[in-house]
Amino acid sequence: MDAPSPARPSYNHGISFGEAVRVWARIAALSFGGPAGQIAVMHRILVEEKRWIGEERFLHALNYCMLLPGPEAQQLAVYIGWLLHRTKGGLVAGTLFVLPGFLAILALSYIYALLGNVPLIQGLFFGLKAAVLAVVLQAVVRIGTKALKNNVMRGLAAAAFISIFLLDIAFPLIVLSAALIGYVGGRMGLRSFQSGGGHAAATGKVVPDRATALGEELPGHAKPNLAWSLKISAVLLLLWLGPILALWLTLGPDDTFTRIATFFSQMAVVTFGGAYAVLAYVAQAAVETYGWLQPGEMLDGLGMAETTPGPLIMVVQFVGFMGGFRAPGALDPLVAATLAAVLTTWVTFVPCFLWIFLGAPFIERLRGNKALSAALTAITAAVVGVILNLAVWFALHALFAEVRGHRLFGGTLDVPVLSTVNLPALILTAAAVVAVFRFKVGVLPVLAACATVGIVYQLTIG
Image 1 (cartoon, helix red, strand yellow):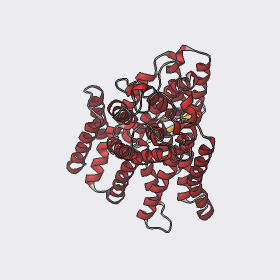
Image 2 (tube, helix red, strand yellow):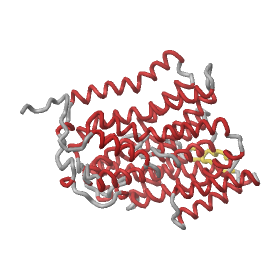
Image 3 (cartoon, helix red, strand yellow):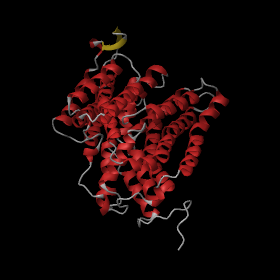
Image 4 (cartoon, one colour):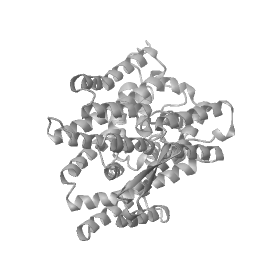
């Protein structure tokens, strides 16, 4: 019998493509709770339940995805989909992971834009802001508990917080510096950089690779193929950068659509460290640089992302939507907003497929590389400081009507005007923090309870 052609690979793991599509659709529908929850769902279904992939390969893929810019949970879906059924598997897995959240946030964005001044809607998002602040603080503690195991990691986190909060150092530079420090520390064999990274602790029982459908060896269809990697990369680069170039040439660099496409394409390249770290970068740029949103509206968008399936980074879709809605040009505002939401989502996620298809065949050969693991460990530590900055920034702008910047050490220190505190928001936020940390209430119940309280308050008192 002739060997299968490399152009039409044979999958000998016994997993049909149709079954894989059904499983990825199920994962997408259950992907609530941020990256930790989404990764745990994938682990439970793919590793423990289906036994399609083993623990070591799952964590290796996760570590690679965490070293990439962009949402690691969605990229992990692309990676595993590629391992199972190569190009079509990765495309289907990654697209299905995003689609439910995109549709849900688009519907909520319409409601927000059209009915945002209705007391019921104002109360809903008033309550969600309080819950989201508590959830972001929980992310700081959860990731910090896992990542800051020694003084070197704590020092990296503190340096990252001071750099971004006080010294106004660019977020990408902070994370890339942490990666370089970790890589060098790993190469030197320093013990401080040898702790596990990322969300590995979110996984459950161990399933050895040899006991799974894929087994221990690299599947034949997934072996490095430079010609295939270059071809698929060229196609994805065209799909990603082509629309941006077309907007520059037809509308000019100052048009809202061009700015949205350019900014979120830059974000797709430089934002490492998970959804919350990305949001710190996006929130400040969208509010302070471009004026697409008000600070409180960024929290509203994050509330949408927290309560819908899919990556938390889908909040950028809401940012693009509001940017298009407020600067529609010659278009109807809702048409412009919809096109801006689609454009934002497109330039955010197309690069995710590029990173996986370009690098995964070669990264599979680097399982167990200590220097890469050390770089991940350092990035995760720095991200704790970045997320803390996000929590402080959100709290300042959500709980106080006025925040003033003061020059200090060459940077800017934001200080709230205490007399402008929003007392009801402060009380509800404190209650959400107590529910999350003292009584260990889950994210969705806290969001639901705060939203209900916010609606009741707005309809009766506000």
